[in-house]
Image (cartoon, rainbow, N blue to C red; front, side):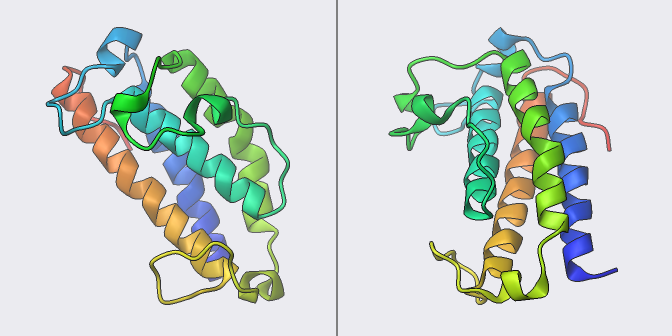
Length: 159
């Protein structure tokens, strides 16, 4: 399996885990926070939808980010005026997932070697390094979502 196929596989896994983290969660429970220093499921879900749209745009896709305006100047959860529903977060993810995963899978080795703009905190300054970092970033936040899901009273996320 090539490195690119492995990344595409992780993206498919992340889609399944992201959706599992939100399964059966109500909008009210999605906005609960363990404490004032921790995000909630709704914020993390929005952030990951936004992050996937960012990477999709960096790879040349022109998909509309349904939360782009809402998140444009948001850096912290306290800056959120309102949250989209869990149904809207799931729909936004599912709308982008197939075209995004296909795009990543179809990248060529030469496209992956091009220097990335912007830069990310990894040793590899290429588009491939950017993709790898943002896939890892996605996995990290899905882990946070799994923990918060349990905190707000739902069963553990399923693989």
